[in-house]
Amino acid sequence: MLMSMPALSTKLIQGLKQSLFPPACPLCSKPLENSAQGCCATCLQNIQVMPKNTCLSCGIPLDATLVPGPCGQCLKKTPPQQETYHLYQYKSPVREAILAWKLHGDDSALIWLLHAAEQQLQTIFSADDLLLPVPMPLYRMQRSGLHHSANLCQSIAAQVGCIMDWKILRRKGKDKRQSSLKGKARERNLRHSFTLAEDGISRVQSHNTQGKIWVVDDILTTGATLRHACAAARQIKRPIFAFSFARVLHNE
Ligand SMILES: [Zn+2]
Ligand SMILES: [Zn+2]
Image 1 (cartoon, rainbow, N blue to C red):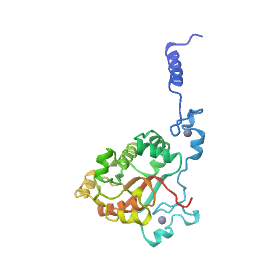
Image 2: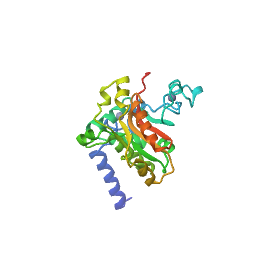
Image 3: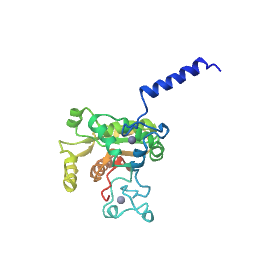
């Protein structure tokens, strides 16, 4: 039987695509044997999502019998945010995806991971929510031309259909790079480094959203950055919710 022209050309195009651009794993770039899976079997096995049972207030993993918390830490000191969520654990290959994005501006693996988490994102956020990225110091934004948490918010907002505004939370002064500091020094460095923009409250009102207000960061290491940014956001006088794309789990 003769093949019709449209069918022939579709087949040809498929063949060309396969040989010119063979499907590769979006995370490790190795050739993909089963493209229906989205990423290679090794990456799929290594991606660690956050455990289901966590302390609702701060997001750390908890024993199922203790859910929703508060955990010991939150009992000692109530966090400024009402609830905290994360998508992934900061481990390979998620770590490499984040580093490719932050160090080389290649967000393809990050976007893939966001799309893979689509259902989870739809559960966490709603279209009526407002996302506030954890702000970067202005001098660093000017130097790199990038604002990672704002870019992350933009991608999430596009996926969920909500709003993001990077001008509501502000960073004060020229603080040291958080990644170069440890525990207590991070805490000291951050204590007074976030504030609400002068027009922060009117900006929130102008969005006219009745949903949740989220403070969003890319990586959560000790939780200090997110906590201090949430504390500043509390000046909005609405409950604040916290989200990070990935979290470092220290007990592993
Ligand atoms: Zn892979
Ligand atoms: Zn907790």
